[in-house]
Length: 241
Length: 241
DNA sequence: CGATGTATTGACTCTGTTCAAGATATGTGG
DNA sequence: CCACATATCTTGAACAGAGTCAATACATCG
Image (cartoon, rainbow over all chains, first blue to last red):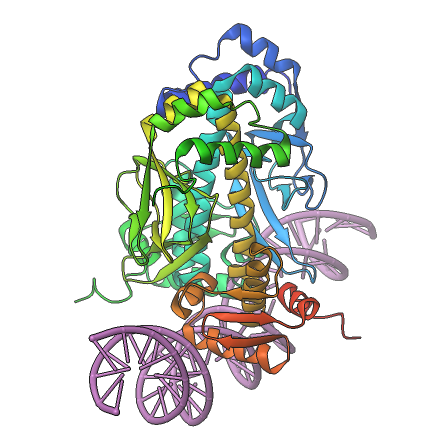
């Protein structure tokens, strides 16, 4: 665990660079500031399957994912589940919280986190306005993702959902055609608003159509990316004539 | 149009109070500041059916709704539509934007707005850190709503969706049992990820079950609120035995 | 009052779910 | 290393909830 760039200072520096790249924001965060930031944070390692944010618990902490992959989900009273997102390095968790968390965050792989108390974050944002701008930028990004996901859940067919999901993953992994799925079929189904059976069937359909290759349960290779993109967007009518 | 509390100063003051109520934030916004704020804003009145934010257009403006009701939606290439939200007085629009808007905002009723340029907002937030905190709070609220909506779209039945929608509206209108629906059935259907026919049928089912009364197309009276709440949450199994 | 757009109702279809059986992995102990 | 046990995933057949299509009813507006 030692030797990795996991402390708050390093992370915040990375955030600063990230912000700078996009909007020339946050570049004011300097080394001396970062040292002070580290005081308010704590490093954590979470094992696969473990939850570190629990739905309905008082929202008192804020996390930055520094490594690994996480799934976020909401449970209904009768056990139905909606996975609202999969996140990785660089994501902020706890933004979408008021009194209590409305979701659970669970590690898919070994996960490294920076933990801040909400009180600590208040202090930090008071000291570093740039940080608050960074948070706002992140919130905007998440809102956009949420809207895309609403379109998927409300208006796309099963096949379109699977195609969209794979495209998302590809882009998320830097565009390489071969992707790893650290989540189960159940997770994918709950993310896409489908059942595991439908997920299985649609993956197979994409394979039969020569768009993807299913190397094993967790590895998929995209063969025809443009074709997949078309299927993801729908275009129910045109494109064929 | 004159004489209404529509200018940026009045609005920001209201925001400040609103923030103060919830989190004792923003109370630092003072009158002299507000006067300066007003310089950066512009008041607008939009007629029903008119759009003031258009999907795919460059995101250069930011709006605060000071009156009326607005629907937000995303269009797919082939015309399928997902309404992502209905908003009213006090809402901020344009948070969920990076380069371009990912949604369209259209007036349902006559709508009053404060318009800010993104550049103007940058200047303002630089001057008033409290404003940025207010924006972050609003973004958090929207993220929570988005997650609830994802659960609805991904995991609820048609009947549950209608019940949830009516409950939302009731709470949104301060808990009075009689609500007005300024949107069409098509809007409701696109919000709930259903068709207009299903919306119609499910409303009728709720009426037949004695949970609501349909006074006319735009007015609904909730008769059995607890019953409606149960149907909104699902509880597919228990509760009966 | 008819004309047009919107909403409701009914009959039928279809996509995705459910239920059940079989296949594939993953893991454990002999 | 293999037999067995358990999880997860895949496949198939029957079913059902919501969609589609078409006819009818209801509003709103000139």
